Length: 235
Image 1: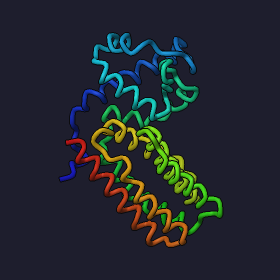
Image 2: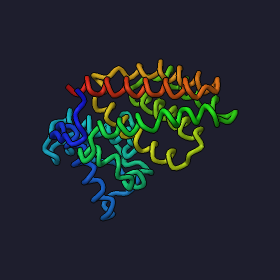
Image 3: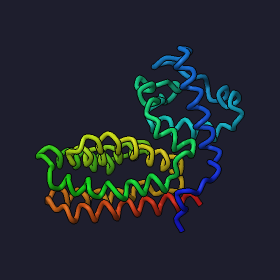
């Protein structure tokens, strides 16, 4: 059974580590102690500072990387991204991580609005929009890592938001969808991240055929499936 909106559960350990790391980064940025492009201390030092094991720290760093706050360079280390300060000003992601909003509330919002955005995209798409959607699908097909797959997933939905022609929804749902992907990244070992590709292809076909009814239905099924995956993986 889907938990009610009022349900509040204690956030998992990885989420609490992420929230703690976010607060520390925001404090360091505000005091000027760290600037975009600055390198973070080694994992061992960070884990000791936060009083957590390195596995929990890595998961927190992974979430922040997906969100675009951090950049991890193989063989070099972790850096604060150039866009970190801007991203940190968007509160919705961090409300999710702090459990001020439930995942159920997010998915309920998506279920209410995104099918209509897909329908509008089918009606209003320009000649360039199907090209962008096809490119995002190709990126998902060629992904080698979970991070690449999640980024391609976000790119696909961004194309739909843009094609819908509603700028307010475009801005709002960029943040909402990234929050959902953050949740999926935290559960990536238990969520089949290649599964959305099938739904993306169906949604793309409906938009390309300018069939708003089918685009609406396919998006509704896609969000319902994502909700089920997250609920199952969270148990």
